[in-house]
Image (spheres, each protein chain N blue to C red):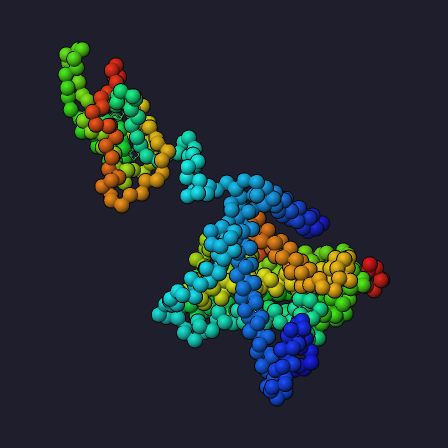
Length: 158
Length: 359
Ligand code: SF4
Ligand code: SF4
């Protein structure tokens, strides 16, 4: 008799599946999950964990958190980050101290793996949610993350 | 062929046919009329097929909580027209080692057999191109000719994926043909005629056949829908063109308009299967409970199309719900379940009719 109970079970499970998709079909009009991108460009907000590109936040006085420790450069598996650093005398202690000159980030090579951000001991670099990254010239994708004239915030040590 | 059986739709066509008969000798005139009707059907169903493609894309989008085509024309209504235009203007590429003649013949085989089946459907009382007394039989015969086109396409492409796809198609159509035929036979047992217009006439007084034959009719309908979906090579029975295994199956090597013919034929076949179901189970162009029976101007085509679209939606619902079957599962379903059930169902139907248990 398992023959007929198989048929019964088969039909029952098929109908279960159809009721699930049918429910979606009816509710689809209420809210499609797709974004109407070029139309809602003004209001479109990417979700929190979106990985657009690596940026270095600066505060109002043009100070950042990067000590130039190079952990991010070492962590990056494909060499997307290059740090040009220098030494300067710290006026308080009088000792020589490492500081960054340029934090160069090649967006064109970045795989968005996030290892650099995890490696950074001072959280100097973070993900930015912008995704409109297409440009006409490849060289525009090589970015210098620290703003000109910026310096590290006082008291940040690695 | 008996030309008097050719019922020409609506009055305007009557005027046209009178005019053609007045300017030509009788034989030439009847041939001209046949050609005109053929061209009209061709144009009508090519456009209808395109809109079915659009419907499928919209329905698929809604099932997946998307929006679907909405850029070309209002609500994307011109999308498939634009796609067809693009396909027409594309270069027809092919590989070197194809069998040229068969390769070029195959798409026409598929599309012509699909369009030929349209001729016998009674869309309304008047609107039927060709009312033959073996209508149902003709439909079963024609609908399985298409598979020859698919086999030709797979063989002549000289491509292993195409050949595997074509072979699966042959296997599938031969198996499921039985179920389609037997479930139709169950209904023919009830009506006692093969002529489509008479099958509909039989439902005018006694209610739709799915009600008249109650239990065996409902079983026959379910079997017919499953086997019909398999017959059209649609998901979950799309092993023929299983994208993840075979590229595009039998039409891997086709491009441009020839590809479009295969694509269109699939949708016209879906329309045909739904139309057969509507005629055999849901009373064709008859309105439900005869609500528009006495309104003279109400187009009977409306009810036919509404019912067909309902069944087409059902098939799309299948497609976007169920995963694809494996080849052995496909054969198990047919030979171990559908076929024995179908045979039992025929006996049941015979008993129901014998004991006068029909409603
Ligand atoms: S996200 Fe990955 S690839 Fe990109 S810069 Fe950071 S470590 Fe390198
Ligand atoms: S960004 Fe972070 S890890 Fe990279 S050099 Fe600056 S402080 Fe070190």
